[in-house]
Length: 79
Image (tube, rainbow, N blue to C red; front, side, top):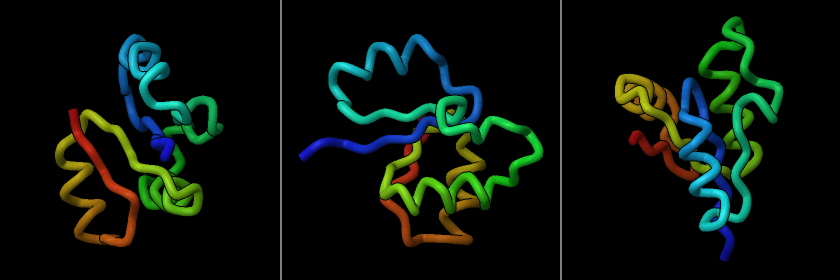
């Protein structure tokens, strides 16, 4: 099974490039057209859920806040 991941926030591009060979379907927030700071977190998470992707993020507070508001997702992982 192929991992489906969406990187969000200021996730390092170098890490995305290192993960790409291991995670066959990785989508950055920029490639998804969701990198506008005016896009609320809820909208980005809704997009991620609709795509059945796990989120990779560096903001631990984001994980706690988003998971408490919506626990039905493919995963939110903070590095």
